[in-house]
Image 1 (cartoon, rainbow, N blue to C red):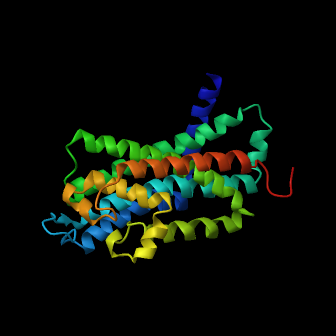
Image 2: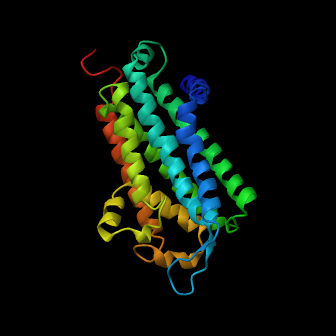
Image 3: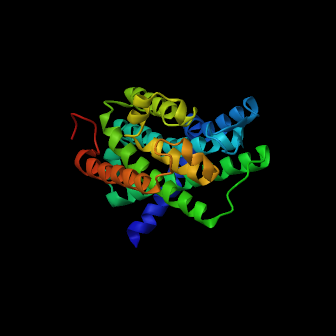
Length: 269
């Protein structure tokens, strides 16, 4: 119980520190919302699925699943990779490890930060899409059930992978390059900014290795009409495979974290 209480206190502290960092808030929290608004204004017409008989959707509805998926990755993977690497480099982790605080409370604080910011970002995205651009939201409870498990698996896998990835940085000065560049590339090849069907086949196969493609596909199954699933690689939403891939990445991230996480910089004790 004490660990849970300390973990909650740590979550509150993490939130305060997060929202004081204007650059971090913009690039991981506000950026997908601004991109959705911009794309919705620029591409105000309707998009066809490329399949006979498929319903058209507005630009805002077309880009919404990708922006939700990108938001999950940015608030989990990118935020964790950047913040943990910086805290390791400036000695924050070393000081925390020497306090009576249970180590698990630190990770509970990070998980709480990601969960709250991800939910808040999603709420803002939905509000902008619905109130600003009239996007039709799902009314079927099963679709929202799909959203819940895709969202939870995406946030969980992104969080542990971000913590694991932070160990690659040799210093806080280099962490931005090794984190932001891959996340940006993945957004372009995973169906966030472009229709996934427009990509070359080999690039689709590359994107399918990583979680973001499956988060985006899962979100499309929530917000797109059913007849759009014919435009997917397998002509179906592949819910089972989506869950399997995201769960596999979650387990892999946990294993890598357990083996590689360090409280101090390389070369220090």
